[in-house]
Image (cartoon, rainbow, N blue to C red):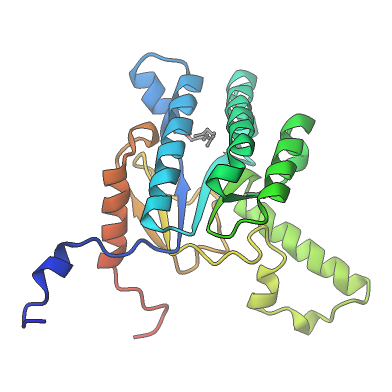
Length: 245
Ligand code: FPP
């Protein structure tokens, strides 16, 4: 390699991170700009999810975690909530049909008990049938909240202490991770939030301790492959030191 590096190599894309997480934000504004109902924005957002999930696979991303419905999203109108649930329902039906072809593993982070029994059943089936696949994993955050996840984990550990199964001093950061929805999933290296908002909105609070956040101005339905490339390039420009020097 010459003094200024290998030009060809520098132009080539750097590898994608192992785990990318995305807050799929801006569907409502996208719809409003077009004088469409908010549900049309979510439908367009679901299409973007399909396209970006495929692209992640091409790039060799092993884990893709998406914020599909938060614990706060129940405050939206009944029409909007049921629109999002319908989109999830049809996506999961399709995913179950294509499972043998696609080999994608599905996990669901969140309290699913508030979802309809049909949707719960689809989630359970998708998780169970796909547990044999280990190439790519999609984690859907559904009725998910980062604080809620931490409180539930703390409660589960406290219960084991109360039952005499554990000692309080056994709780380490590593041990605590096993009580979270994300048990056995490595933390995301990169978290992307499109739509111009710059906050975490209760997403992966524990897991994002050392993640690189990339905030982008594009609305989620307009988010394309080139935007993902740009976010990955930005991630590589950052110097990740994990508190070291
Ligand atoms: C945030 O945008 C988005 C949501 C609350 C829902 C995300 C859901 C989907 C993309 C569909 C899920 C289905 C599949 C198959 C992935 P917003 O509504 O808050 O947008 P706004 O801030 O512009 O109003």
